[in-house]
Length: 376
Image (cartoon, rainbow, N blue to C red; front, top):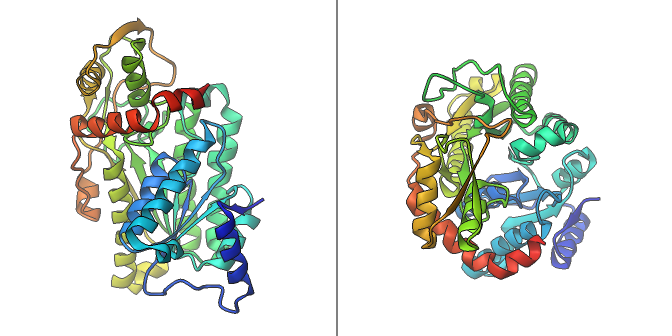
């Protein structure tokens, strides 16, 4: 069942339903539906879009991949920030729903209340290793969920869609950096396969229904609100608690760590790109736009060097335990971001040292002893 985050928002929904004008948002600004809006990347994207003046509608099912209360805290933080910056009137620009993208009736209900101009589709089951253990769940959520979003957009007349994809679609590549034109036929985890299928579905719907689609391949995103299964979180926690870090292989793997704030800016730039293209050329709008674009930092860092960054920011030495490589992990991610710079004006600004300083500060403030209790 689709439901709002709090009683205040439920009352607002009733008032909107009783009004003859269900599409109450200012037509001069875009209203953007963000699926997975309570999650790590999604909550930062919501904040960035709000900062740029858009009305934002979030839908999230608050699944149990990790503590759902942490996602509720993300939404509460956005709402508190809006009220602090804009007063109570700012709450009219942000709407948070608890619902499931697998149920199109819930999406239709949102469309009856809000005139959606753009969908930013970020809802997905995350995690390479967990996808190996439970591939059916990943197929259901990541593939069927994407089909639901695309069908909903087509039926609702929503032409503009940004889709979150992943660097994992590249699999193991020998040629670097990874370009959008590279052949990507050998993914090595069910998660990676679901993200590649999402891109293919987007391409198909673009061709059949002339939808404007931008698929963004995110590269190793990190930063405040990061998931507890990700290396920055696990390493920071282990060093602070003086526990061992499992270092897979010989520590030679490299990742193109990209700060979540830069990713959120890239998503906003993609929204701008679609809007600009639609205004510029009516013919393009009729036939639709389809692009796949890397969003990364463009400078990979080795595992050992990354652990040293964590040690510096935490102020303690790491205890390392070398273990065999895990199935599904790739040895390297490395984004060629020239296309993102050219089409979107994308420029990542946050280096790993600065980004991890922000992450460690967030972790110590928001997790610490309270976080340990919630994890148990």
